Image (cartoon, rainbow, N blue to C red; front, side, top):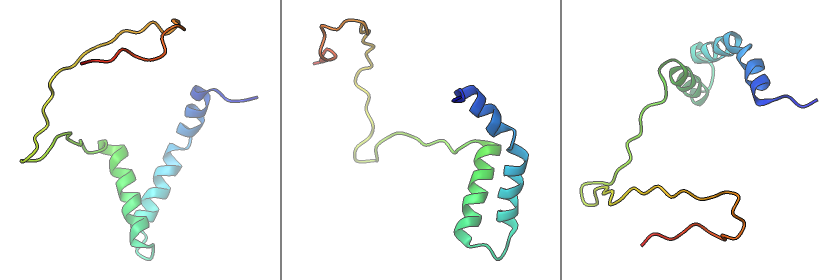
Length: 88
């Protein structure tokens, strides 16, 4: 029988301590390839502190400019509409 997403999440979380121990062991293994150590360090930091915030924006010559934010509500059961309305 197929597992539900909630069951899968629970099964995966049951291995948290051993997974973190493996990542820490790779990080501290001086004979491991540097790329493996960096990936392990990144994974540990991401889980402990969250992934770094990535700003969305342009550059000095082309700054990000939001002209308009619009919410469009579409009836998902409407089979007559072929596409979302266009915004001019």
